[in-house]
Length: 251
Image 1 (cartoon, rainbow, N blue to C red):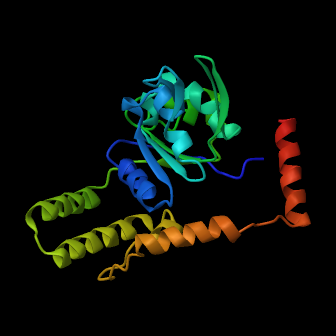
Image 2: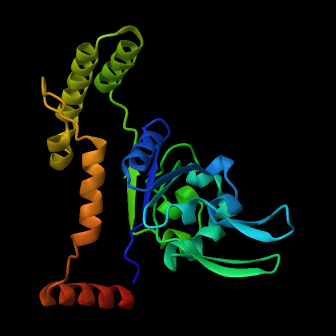
């Protein structure tokens, strides 16, 4: 079993998926960010380069460079022609190369965090995730977690959102920007608290001060957790998972 988990974020355009990926790449001890509509298969995996002396050399792609780190792939739905190149890396955690007389296997022990837009422009609840993205089941099954983000219309929230954007353009004082952001989150908290209590608890409260964790501290925390946090299943939990798996196999 591979140790790394792969995450897919599916949501309507304009919900900040790209910003989340950029933030994850920046805070990761070894994070690589690539955009699906401007990358190639060689850029993801590896390519064979011809040196000036006539010898061949390997040039690592994003998945190899992110070994023991995170590879954030944006616009995942725009790179259908390159999806096959991800199958080995996501499951075996390696990249196999057989080009120009060069045969080797490179380590790609990376966690993939991908973001994609639905094929129809908006997520259709009547369809499955695979139908919304039009990607193969073999690739979709390699993602351990799939998060759906929906853009639900809300007149009051949309009004506060536009006020926030205008505030960013016309306000030059950080405190005023934070005040607008705090008020916006409080409105979102009121509208979503009844539907999702957990999401409501995660939202900022009115006049709540922001206390960001420094990136270097968060990087150290992630590195420490990956090195020393080794969770183990109890016999009871293992039995529950086994029974759940067997029940799924029957269906």
